[in-house]
Amino acid sequence: MPKIENTTGMPINLIIDELKSDDIRKRIHSVKNLDLIASTIGPERTKNELIPFIQELLDDDDEVLIELVESLSKNFIELVGGQAQVLLPTFEALCKVEDASVREKAANQLKKCFTLLPDQKKIEELSMGIIKRLNDSDYYLAKNAVVILVPAIINQVSQNNQNDLINIILKISQDQIPQVRKFSSMYFQDLVKHFPIVNETLIQNTLNSFIKDEQDFIRMYIVDALIASSKTAFFQKQQTFVLNMFKQLAEDQSWRVRYYFCDKLADIGDSVGKDSYRKNFQNYHLKFLQDSEPEMKSIAALKIEKVSSFMDSEEIMNKLIPLLKSIQQDQNPFVRNSLASSVLSLSPIIGKKNSSEQILPIFLTLLKDQDSEVRITLFKKLSLITSVLGVDSLSQSVIPALTELAQDKNWRIRASTIEVLSFFARAIGPEFLSDKVLKLLIDWLGDKVYAVRQTAIQQTALLIQILGIPWADRNLLTKIWGFQSIQNYLQRLTVLFTITQIASSLNNDYILKTILPLLQQMSKDSVANIRSNVCKTSILLAKEKGGNVVEPLKKVLQSLCDDQDAEVKYQAKSALESL
Image (tube, rainbow, N blue to C red; front, side, top):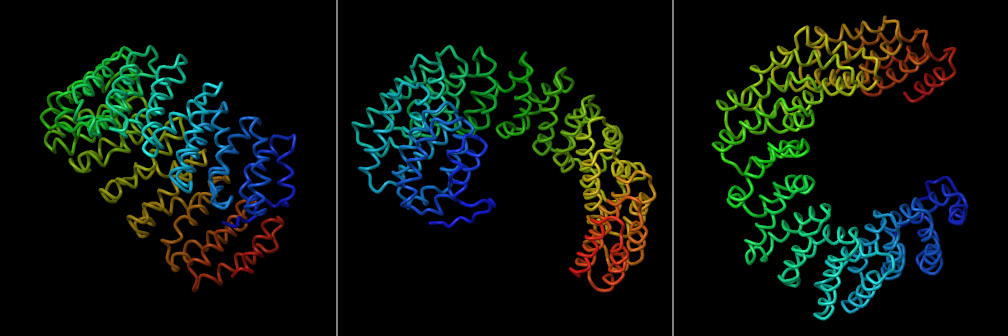
């Protein structure tokens, strides 16, 4: 049994007592540490005392039950000596609570417990009992667990019990409560994998029942069951039935069902094969790109990268790209953003000439999009087109877009834009980093938002790794060191953060010649936070670089040992003691 260390800082007796507390926060804290309690009291007391007490918690608030099922799902079977059947009543009770996540986790833990029972007879006896009790429960949501459990044990029980389970599933799929039918629809994919134990008649009748359901959230999950059935011998026997079912979903009146179908198109293509996909489903994807619902166009555009693998280059050129040109200026930014995330993936398929003529104009249009998220998404996919067309031809188009994004009001956009620099530096080299581009980086280093400054510092370190210290010293670092004289102390901090980030790239001579004078000067800064970071930077350099930089850096630290700020003084003395 695993021994768990008490890291709570509390005596174990107090943690146990908190299980009975009236304060929900204390009960949650105690429940989170059930494994610690069980490890401390041992398997026998856990089975005889702790588990019965846990049963009393099952009427507690949802917050407690969520933590309870999490704790019991970790390694609790080991903590009761591997006797999984001890936990079955608790997990069965948790399958009847209101919170859906608790029911699902409890049902999955029951599945795990079944696999650890000592023999086949015990598995059949206990699992059938639990399933029948949950199915007969007055609380209809308990049937959620039933549809999860049945696929897990149907191939481990007798023929009679298999028939009982099939009848249970059939009734649940026709239950008068829509939420129950939804559970059945969602998990039917797990059951069809057991064909031919689950016979053709059941599969066909259940799918026919689902597809006629008036609730679209029930119909949509049939897609998953059909995909699962396409990977079994059922598809060979009932191929026409399965393909017709797929087509009914693709043409469903509800856009949510069509959306879910489109989202699964790549999986459908993989399950039915390339030829069948092109014959039966390719035109649906093209149709979705023209749908009146923006959500449909968005998901269809998002799937271009995956489904284009089922198309040949001629079909892409003649059928797909003309539609993409029509949505590159769609009114909905989500549609354009989806297009930006996937359109460049066509370049490797259609080749350099066609990419230059067909994809590049779309790229340049999206590069000027009024929505900055669209442009950022496009930048993240740049490698797909540069690998075909080369970087040089695109760099002059990119710089104006970079400049505009660098000044975006949204700081997340500014931070995301910075990451493009290292891509171009690696692909093109220093030629790309003109004075105009480097000015953008300097502006980002002085940004008013901390996250932007930190991202810029990280990119500076990446550029130095790619292009080397000599290039950085000539073109970039001198400007950064100039931040030490700026009135805003946050920008002065950027100097120290940069030194810390690039320390591994610096040699000792550069540290003595350039960095040491900076630290000496900044150790006299009027802001204590600056002097504190001088301590941190000095100790980092001394430990990482060693050699002839240690003694000069010690002197910087010694000068701070008499600092007027107690925290700075403490840091300096601690740093010296560690050297």
